[in-house]
Image 1: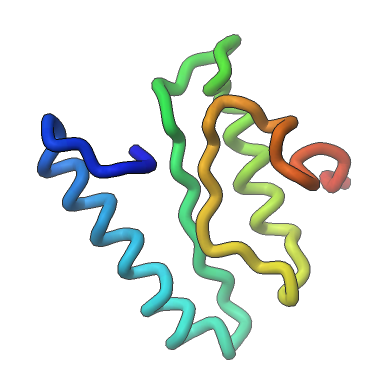
Image 2 (image 1 turned 90 degrees about the vertical axis):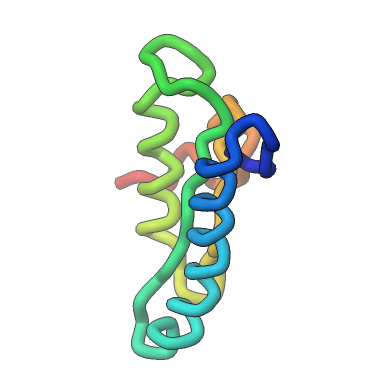
Length: 92
């Protein structure tokens, strides 16, 4: 859920809380080398679709392997792993 939706109030509130938590944790633990980030999946996860679990896993892998000076705090998977720089080819 990349944007709040009134028909999903409790889910929207929970996601808003996570988005607030990330910079707080980053401020506290980032200087110690802890990379804090979220991955938002903007659709229903299902194999063989734009929201294939393997494509989503690539987002997590990219976050895991980012050099510290390029750390991202939020990644939105909108259905195309190829659309994000470094999404392919960085995996050993």
